[in-house]
Image (cartoon, rainbow, N blue to C red; front, side):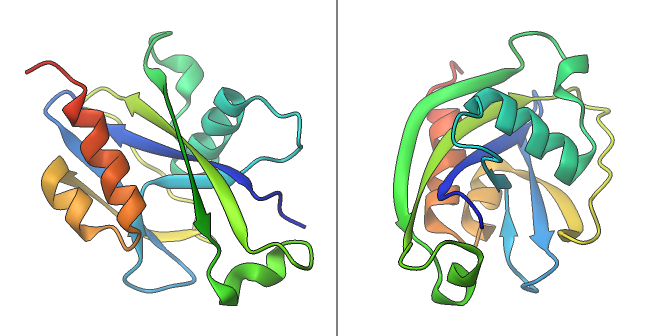
Length: 149
């Protein structure tokens, strides 16, 4: 059963383009990297690093130490009914912790085909609008609202 605590990682380049990935199980559902903790005591930054590598092939540990930033923001959202079977009976909500990851412009993406079928680098405002999850769009906008021009 999945743990109802997850991470969302907004991956972006210096030019403010954001990586979006399309879900394999829902055509047209574009999102940032997301994933549940593997254990209740798993460190959130470790979970974010693991999920980024699993879903995109990007190795956070090969980037500068401060590339992955904990945004110190979390939300609680209702799990879509069609995905609740993955969780313990009665679990209907998830707590998601937000992270941001700056990557070099020449970063290569290698998707996990069982999870995602396509990716795009988009200007951050366009990326925020394209996300199927409104909170994912909010996370993208929050990354850039906190950055100095």
